[in-house]
Image 1: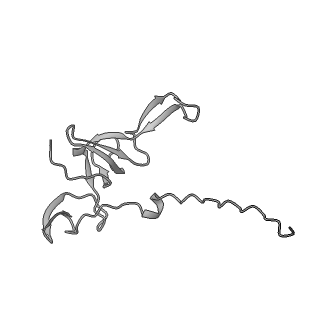
Image 2: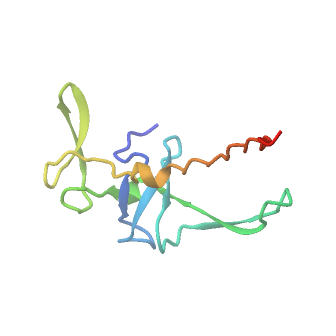
Length: 136
């Protein structure tokens, strides 16, 4: 198992291969094989898979899946200087943190806002009370 400088949800730039120069986000890392699943616009490393519909509600056909790339072919993008960078490690407040070798800023993983990821609550209707005859 090799040590990696990238983590899940990091934004990375592809530095080698046919997608060189494109940016993507890491969805998962397989440390045993040394590969990362990346997802980004216009990447050639997108796999297609033929899927059969198992239920009536399922959709069959060609499904696009994120492609994998070797970890050595990606570099994390620093959120401060917005450039691909090598990663250094240092201790801050008793914790080991990653930092950008170019500008010295602490590397922070950009995540989607909580509003975008949470689903809206389902509205429930209250049962209407049956009308009582006041004339009786």
